[in-house]
Image 1 (spheres, rainbow, N blue to C red):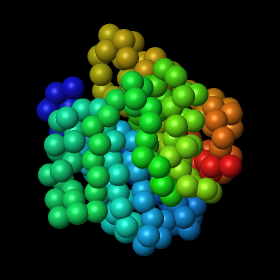
Image 2: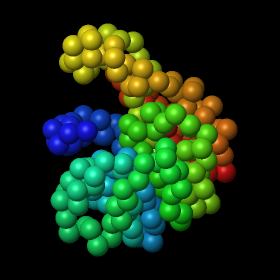
Image 3: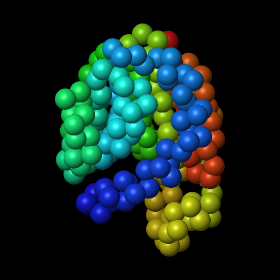
Amino acid sequence: MSAEFVERMIQTYHQVHTPRFWKEVDPLVSGRITENSTVMDIGCGPGLHLKEIDERYNPKKLVGVDLNPLMIDRAKEILGDRMHKVELILQHLQENPELPQGNDVIFSSRVLRSFEDQYTSLTSINNALNDDGLLVILDWARADLQTYADYLGSEPASVMKFHRNFSRYSLNDWEYILENTGFRVELALSLPPVHLAVVARKL
């Protein structure tokens, strides 16, 4: 993953984390995050999601997990004077699924669908949440090739090569996965053209 890719993630952040996404998840999330809360972001990338979470909810602590050192370094820059309340962890969750416990809300944006062992990953996430904690997923949705080509503006060969990784699970799939790893789904939302959102509560 190159520095160019990191910068592209920064440039396109608000195309994914849209006002509609926040409007839909806020009624659930705002009631769960307090001034004493810890909030984690799995696949935190360059830190923009953590920054927006802090601006919106002002939790006591933020935890970011990412497997790419370039992402962690850029997150340190972007989070800047917030770093006193941030813990950034360099970790490949599929190789080491254990996560710090004590989280009230865990976010993950466009990451979880790529994991090969969903049962182990989601069980670990469940264990990392406090009782009644929330998992908020924003991810790619299952869609056809032409829809992805139009959204990404990519050459057909590139879309066909990477499409399976993007377009892996439907909302029904996520509900099945989460309900069988210790969660109750409280929101399942399509975000056309190529994204979805799910909020699930730890049972």
